Length: 491
Image (cartoon, rainbow, N blue to C red):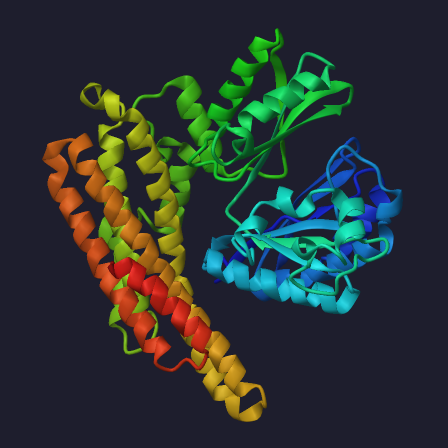
């Protein structure tokens, strides 16, 4: 597997003309970029392309796709059920392997700048890359769609783009670029053509109007059937099966039922595992019970002959080797991941047991969040080592470039952001582990004590790495903001 792996899911405002979509996909073909999926929807008049690749390559691929879309798609002639503001409407980057959400924010900013510069398309940043809280939600940016933004971008301060001039591209509109966690595009079809019912259900289920957290929703008429169209922005905290049951219950209020559902694009395997556990009511379910998961673990060496030692020994030996990486930052991230893993084990072994049924909801939420934190901390192990290598590379090339100091500062910022992210995550791990003490099996208190101790060590190590990078940084606002975040952790 590549050392860095990023997913990108660009949405283009064309779902009817296969020739145009083919041309956009062709423009994005580059070495180290792989096409996983393409979905075209004629009713929405929209296509969703799923790519994965190395960090540098996937950025350039997406930029080229935006350029081709701007040549082929004319929003002044575009009609479809789905809201849109650009030929290339929305471009999210999602961390997969060896990168953090902070890395994806940096990628989003780079891509946004290039789109603006190369194609004269204004760009807005959203989700984790948003420049203001109001722009975290895509709906706020896209309000009024292409026509509304075209009319207001030059006169309304809230419409000022993050990159580019205050005017839309005449035919390609504006684009939104951001960084986020894995999202599930999930639609439920009802046994009615009354789109008003779908809209009422969508209003009930989406978070912005009082529904489920991490759900966005709207109602559409698709192929003559009412559809509740949803985006699940954090499936671990608001799982897909809970959303389906909510829609089913709301539909019953209007005398209708779901007849089918669909997934647009790809879905994390874990989401289907969650649904299986829920609907089949499997006791003490764990993903390692799945044959393919166990086989993958064996093949990857995580459960090789020699047991646990075979999996952890290579990393320990890498730490012991006389090389700069992996170092303390990677060790801190690994310590944090182990802390999250231990706390997850304790919660999982109590959930579902009769003595702890009253804490089922709390335990489920803890398990979901700890799983997410564990994955992010695991990714930071390698990301920290990569960031150190980038700093060394920047210092070596500084003498050959007039922009050497800026490159060093950029590399140091990344090398600071990764351990800072580790520190913020392990504080949350420690808090969750503490909260589990009164709601889990007391015979496992030593495991929680170990988890909290590991989190504490990870925090101290991560902050030490932050501090040593701050000493070399020459960016006062960044340093001040970083110290503010560090102070908040120590409060």
